[in-house]
Structures are given as structure tokens and as C-alpha cells.
Length: 189
Image (tube, rainbow, N blue to C red; front, top):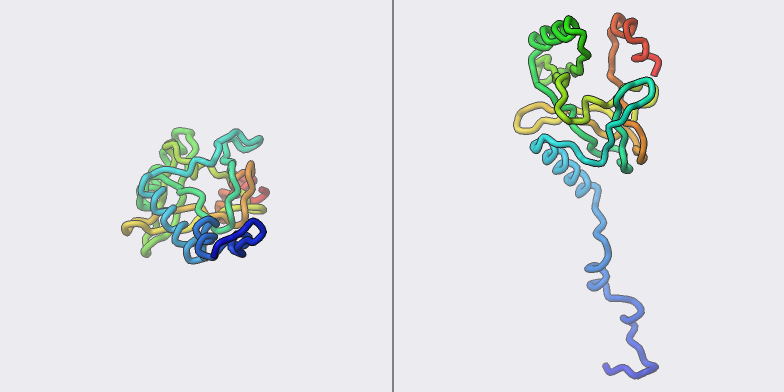
């Protein structure tokens, strides 16, 4: 159909579905988003790297802490708590040695496949998970066991939406009365 100066085609005002599907951003289904998150976790864990949208900074009264520079939606992957994966016996020995040396320790105890294990992140590796501070009262992330290539990994997920410039916090889950007595901030923050 030929068009004249005053006679216009309706598709000039309303683009065809085929054309608009090519130009509009693709909307992801919840299944697509879950697959994307799964791929992200696998990629960062296997590359032994953390996402780059974080800042390690001095937090008043706490020392170092991790700040998110971007919005992180609830449920999304944050980073890995990376360290040496060791058995309980070795962990207890290292813990005693760190105490004797007067050094702090960054040890995360957990159970997997009916084994008590520990991720020892005491030796700095450049990974940020070990620097996420504690909050029992207002955590915004949590740890989750993630198995890759039949090896357990601990990852952090957002408990709720995390806003830019917000400090990352999780509940260390300490229940030992002696530890809480020695470190009262475990119960008060």
C-alpha cells in the first residue's frame, strides 16, 4: 500500500510485536533469575574471586568492614567465605596456636556430610567474606552451604535488599556462654 502525505500506516504509530520484541529489554522469569544466580555463584567460587562492587573500609568501633557499593536484591549472591577447609581436630589446634600468638582468628565451623569442618580464613587472602561484621539484631545477609564439585563452600546471600553504601552484616550464631561473656558485643549488636 502506497502512502501519501496525509495517509500513514498504523504500524508507524504502533510498532509490530516482532520489531518491539527485538528492541525492548528482555524480562527474566524467576527461573531465569535463579539460573543466573547459580551461574554467578559457580563462576566466582571456581575463579576464587569476589564481585568488585564492595569497599573494605574502617568501621567505627569495629575495625574493618565491608560496604556494598550497589543495590543487592534479597536472595542474591554476595560473596564466598573463603579459607582453608580443614577438619575439626586441625581447627582446634590452629585455634590454640592463634590464641598463643595473640592473633585474632577467622574460623567458621559447620557440618557437612556428617563431618564437622572448619573454614579457616585467618590468613588474609584478599577475599572479603572474612571481613563481614556481626549483627544479631540487624543482619542483612546470611551464610549458606553451597556444594561445587563435591566440595562444600560457604557463601553469603542477601537476607533483604541491601542498599548502596550499606555495611554487610550477618549473625555469627555464637551460642557459647563463655565466648559471649568474653565478647559481649556478640549479644549486644
